[in-house]
Image 1 (spheres, helix red, strand yellow):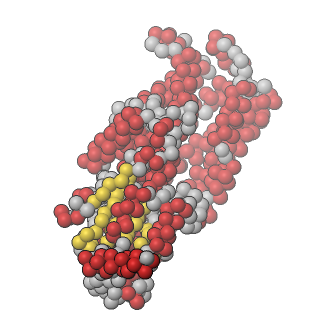
Image 2: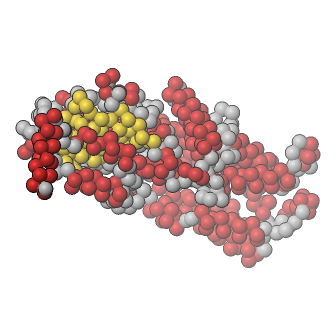
Image 3: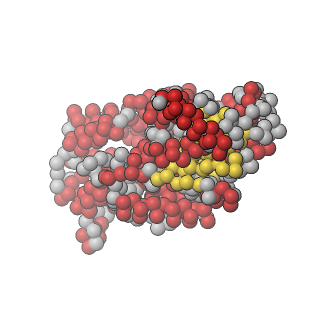
Length: 583
């Protein structure tokens, strides 16, 4: 390209919501802040781009491209094609650079996360758009934490300049690029908007409830339990009860909670019914306008049938439990074990639902969860952290990798060996799911992804403590057999049987979480509690926190004026003339 070429940086934002369920348009345009501008928190990055533009009069920044950022295949395809059409004036769009149609233009594409895949779709449209000028070329493309698919969003090198530079910036700790981005999900924001006004109780409870508040409530109930030995309970089960004051308070609060639960389940049943009758549509108007007509419902008929059955059973069970509690509350009978006996059928239904066969990764709750997730998955494509396979032979030599793992603020706190083992297990899980997208393999990915995260530390610790308490109370081996033989009659029989079932249930979940070395965490908790949010969001954003010197050095030759032999000679003669004048 000649020295009169106009160079343009084209900046494209990435996906902001991997599961496509961020209802607020304010948050949807940001990364992990609430700013409307995707790049607002990346001042160093933007300032350096602007500085380069100031230093080079032939260089400009195009940063007005916007898309919703949803993690959907269709959205990325539409966003990329629209960008190419908008720049050159194709497919009915007004050309943004209409004045440059007959000029040499070199584009320098920069995309973060799935913004890189939007750029790939841009290259595909630019290659075939009739209005795209022949003298417009892509001089460089910089991928920032972009997950590269094997099948989706393949790069087209047709419009590349012969000396096009491809720059790939990665962070080894980036879980989104390496794992999470394998799944393209259907847009759920439209579903949320469709039913949000139909679930007021759910919205209120979510706003009012906190984990800390639940913990305080449970601890309060535990402290109000009468202190008694197992033998005394065994000999006089009816005498094991709350005081009248505590019992009335606990029962009334329980009834309020159960009433909310029942209302929520009824609201959810109505929401499921509405979603099962509504054809899927994207929440973004532009995506909706360019999308093909949908034949998919938000909730499939088979999933609706299972959800309806479950919700009906739970609603009836909660109604029965409320009736039993109200009856004993009205008679001021706060005996604990007789109440449990009254509602044992309903409690056993709940235990049945939560039952898990860890070896087969199957059980009612897990089976249903799989169907809900599977209903939401648009496409699975095992990604990689390099575009090498998408490049033609002539451009593979023009690919440069820049690893910025050491720029991650918690680099020194992470056990490298543990993290590498963690990633290896995840990658193997992905390969297994790619070969067979069944329930067990999907659950294996979830276990490997979630089990080592410190968000689950409290849950895993609670499981361990609960199992320890159950073992102490119920025993194991011969002690457990002996305890069973003593509780084959009276009020204590159903309670004891239920306790054994709960003990087995807790152990199965603990086994499941430990199965893939889930008892280990990835960060030194004395320094910083590790989190899935860090590895999937913060680590994913390190690549755009700054325009790193290594990137600038690779970009500069792509837009700096070419030094021809004649220009170099003229420059030297001019320098000599200046020197002579000074003498």
